[in-house]
Length: 272
Image (cartoon, rainbow, N blue to C red; front, side):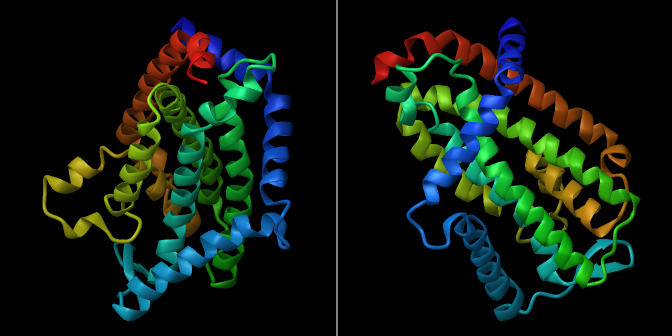
């Protein structure tokens, strides 16, 4: 518990530094490209178009039933979940290698190492905000107008951020000690894409598989995003048991990640 409190305090005290360095990282990453940071949005859009072409056009996917009597075109259903997946995947991958890829720089600077994964996550969070705005505009043009349920999108964005930070604390620590962890994580997340309700509905499965797959916290976030964008209901209230499970899992991951990080970070420089 003390480690978690310490890590959270470090995030608050160095929030200005996190924001500045995350913006600098985005700019430096794309400074040699003619289109600059536009590629951070173009790449996921290309991925979405590819999945839509394969799963929506070639295989002629029918409309998706998101509520009793409510069907939506596959492309909008896909878009509602895929924008979260891109944020989760990119942030988790960048966060896992954030410390060991900057060890030389960290050895010369004086700020807590716990902010490093957050810098990587924030740099992707800016892109996620742009993607959410673009998706919202597409939905509006397609006739899915704002309603009161849209406000819960901010809650789910915050929830996603908390989950990613908790996971990144664990993976960035382990990846610094054992570099193979990053490669294993990358391979695992590619598999998770097909085990999450992003490209297909888990309702086509028979019990107990749907219940087991709901243990994946991404299910909670993805369905929450879709409920907000399509204006279905207050997902986090209607499914309050699931909300308790999600935040319980996040707290456990945060406590474990904080303990692991604080215990080993004094030795990180030894892994140069």
